[in-house]
Each structure stands twice: as structure tokens, then as C-alpha cells.
Length: 305
Ligand code: PSU
Ligand code: MN
Image 1 (tube, rainbow, N blue to C red):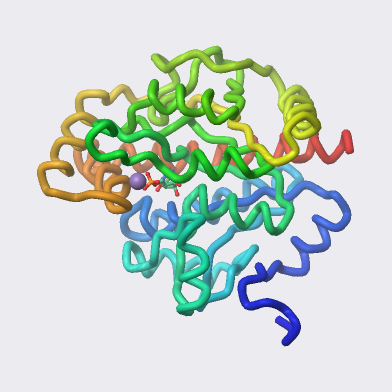
Image 2 (cartoon, rainbow, N blue to C red):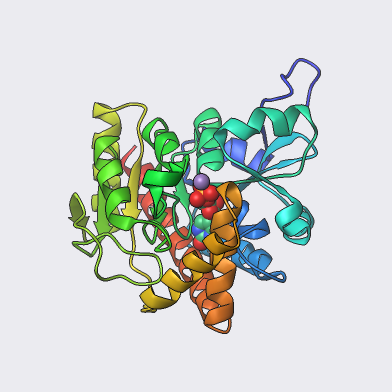
């Protein structure tokens, strides 16, 4: 970093900066799932596998996080290991938390919303993740609505995911995405995937059959709405029907008095425990599959530009 550069300016690796300058495909990946999404090092595996899949599809992976107060775009394996080792002691950083994480020299794992805020600064248009945040169950009392959604509404990026996490109120989340003007595109599906399962969700706003079609919609959307994002929902390859387990996990976490940012990681870890690690395994798989699809769409978009 040069002395002229502002301390909050994101630091990109040479490879990522070059690719962006040349209009080559780049895919952003988040670090909250590395620190908070999994137990015992499995977050690291998910991150490394996602990066491999992005490269295999012909794009450059850009994993984003705050390291010692620097917003980093592109992390080495050793740096990713720091996020994994920190676990929930890493700050969970949404868009509003970036400034404090920078000024206070923190280790900050960026959520989908935090990662998108950095994408906006860096000019990255594609991102892959597991599930986005949304409207929590019982939102009428808690007003707990993930900052992922409003951030997506003001970031020109396409996020490939398996829908909102099924621990949420998926219909309310879908309604809010319509209100915010976020297109919800279904990848070979007419309904919004529900994280662990592809079925039973609300209808999507359009369906695509291939990456070129998805890239065309993104391109048209950005012509019409220069500053707004889209969701591409890809059903998980292996579906896990665990609605009752999810309700049990949500109730247990609520009964323990856990609120705010801690809710999502706590519920995910109870579900993992109740499924003897199987939900975590499926989660890891579709995170990597979604990263690969984000790369395919980024490649198709770069080819049209
Ligand atoms: N998807 C996963 N695992 C995760 C998350 C998403 O498969 O851990 C994280 C993402 O970083 C998402 C965050 O942005 O959970 C949402 O948290 P909240 O509901 O507190 O906004
Ligand atoms: Mn929340």
C-alpha cells in the first residue's frame, strides 16, 4: 500500500487487479462462512475448494476479508487459515462494520453484504456463496432482517446461491427481494431454492437454462439499473428435507436467548449437530458448486463484453 492510498481502500492482489483491468472474469467469495459457517477447519476446505472450482471454470477467485485492518481482495492459503482458526472470534463484518474493522485493525470475516460492499469498491460483478441472509422467522418481534438484502439492492453484482438459508422465513425474504427490485433468477428451476433443499420455495422472477442466458439478463439489468444486484438461485445437487429439524434448531437457539449476528452461526451449528455433520457436508458441496456456476456466468459475461 502506498502512502497516498487511503487506509480504507481495498488492497487487490496483482492477479485480480490485472484481470479486472482487462475485463476478465473475477468471482468474489466471502469469509464469514470460513470463520462462522462451519466447525473445525471445514470452512477452510469449503473456501479452498470454491477457489479451485472458480479457477477450473476459467475465472479468477477473489476471496474477501479484513486482515489486520486492511480490506483484502484475494487471500493466500495462510491468510485464509487465519480466518478459519479464528472461528467466531473473528468479527462478522457486514457493510456497516467495515469502517470500524479497518480503523481498529481487526480481523473481519465479511458476510455476503460486507463482501458485496467491497465488490462495489473494487468493481467485481460476480459472487458465489452458500445461502444469502434474509428475513428471520419471527421478524415481526425482532425486526431481524439481514443487511445482505439492502446491500444487494445497491450493488451491481450477481450472487449465485442456493437461496436464502432455510432457517429464515423464505417467503418473507422473497417478498422483500421483490420490494427491493432484486431479480431472482432460477437456475433450471421455477422456484427459489431453500438452501438445503431445492423444492417448496416461492416462484422465481425468471428461469434460465444456461450461463449465457444468465449473463444476458445480468447485462440487461445493469443497463436498466446501473447500481443494483441480482440473485441466481441454484438448487443443491443433494437435497436434504429437514424442515422439522430446522424448526427445532431455531427454537433451541431462541430459547438460549441468542440474538443478532450470532443467530445464523448458532442455528447452522445446531442443525449440523442434529444431522451428525451431514448438513455441513452438503453445505460445503453447494458452496463450491455455486462458486463454479458464478465463474461460468462471469466467463459468459466477459465474452459478451
Ligand atoms: N451461507 C452459508 N454459511 C454462512 C453464511 C451464508 O452457507 O455462514 C453467512 C453469510 O456470510 C451471510 C450471513 O451473509 O451468514 C448472514 O448472516 P445474518 O443472517 O446475520 O445477516
Ligand atoms: Mn441479523
